[in-house]
Amino acid sequence: MGVSSPPRIAILASGRGSNFEAIARAVGNRTLQAEIALVGSDRADALVLDKAKALGIPTLVEKDQAKLKSVLMDLNIQYLVLAGYMRILKEDFLQGFADTRGFHRIVNIHPSLLPDFPGLDSYRQAYEAKVPQTGVTVHFVDGGVDTGPICAQKSFSIADCQSLDEVERRGLAIEHQLYPETLNWILSEKFEILNHKGKLHVQPR
Ligand code: GRF
Image (cartoon, rainbow, N blue to C red):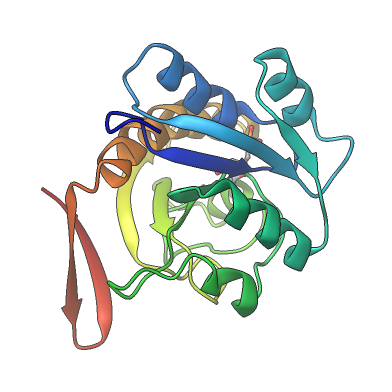
């Protein structure tokens, strides 16, 4: 690799892969400096795999976290990007991405304003709770479910949404913009980590 090689990332996804597509598009039009070394999935039938293959990106189907970790370690990637990956990563796996600054070099996108509505079906949770607004969070991954240090959040109003579909449509449009944009400063290491009473805060600079 030459000195000017873009940061290598791998993407893990379990389904449709619209966030993968948004990231690949940003890489393609050079608004995101990165090389997607691999798209991995726990599901052989995940649509994301077809989308990656169509772009000539190597793919892998692997459920076993120890095996997956070993492949990723060999690829020497800088950050692991989760995009609709439906599995909880175990401590052993996370350790492979431990950064000396106290977080894991694993990024996730979650469809709510965390810490509100963690877990599954978060647009639905927000819609059914009738909150006036919800949003999208990009965060580093820790051992909990959607609990790691928050990198970026963007909210949007759902007070006037007529259906859950509409909430999801608005949310996804924001995801597709926020994820590549946030990855841009994460991958270029243009951020600081502040430790406030044991809680890490990520601040772009
Ligand atoms: C997105 O809503 C993402 O925030 C969540 O899972 C969904 C994945 O969608 N983690 P896609 O596979 O990227 O289209």
